[in-house]
Image (tube, rainbow, N blue to C red):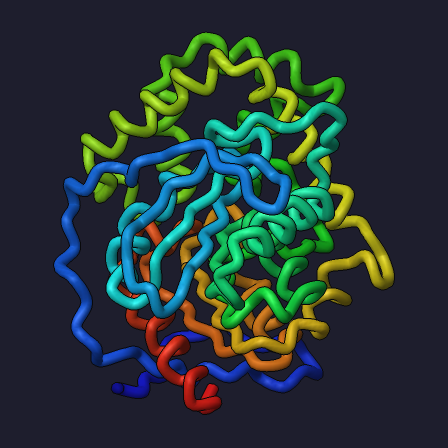
Length: 334
């Protein structure tokens, strides 16, 4: 195992710097297959919650649960799940209303409700504590789960989690046009603009926002994303889920006291890894140090030349850091 000190963001004034001494695993990883298609998906019921999930076959020693961001889906974890599969079987979920998970009647798409459904689903797996990984909105959901049910979580990995900003801006969300399209008053013009885009153009727009280097995103993956956008366009709940989840994030960002994610973070006691890209155009890297500092047992990895979805843009680097944490937590050395 090699210890490295990655580039990091400055800590907020008056706060101690977060721990940035991140151990990267020396254990060999599988070769990364850039043509790996999305893992097979199926609708599964666990703990009374029905979700569409994609399973990555892997070790029986542990289970990793992957949670996507706003506008994303279980396909966002294809590469990272493959790299970590020798060490943990992977379950990548589509949150209610996203991917191909149909929400139950009356579901309101708040972060709290997403977290409650994920708790029930993970508990129903009967797999013991899981390694929980979340990106963007999924990071906020994973944070809530780890704070409320530490018995279900072995380690926590947060990749550009949607932590509150004092200056919230719809353009910083995972798909700004989609987000703006569902906001009152200003959404009508954006909806007209979206209607004029093909699924592939819309997919390319998302990658342009989420990747530091959009040109590095493979063409075949763009085709896969466009196909998913096309399929979701026919789902009656898709627009409502995007709209309500967008507003749910805004409400959480304005929450005060115990309801604020900044108040929730110090309750997380499990080993945690916070990963951020220096060129994240969605959730600013300015929040990286404060996020890691707020958690009880966290280390911070800031990756240069990386955008909002580090698990997709830099999967090998993220896998080495995640595996380093998994190896260290077994010996309580994190």
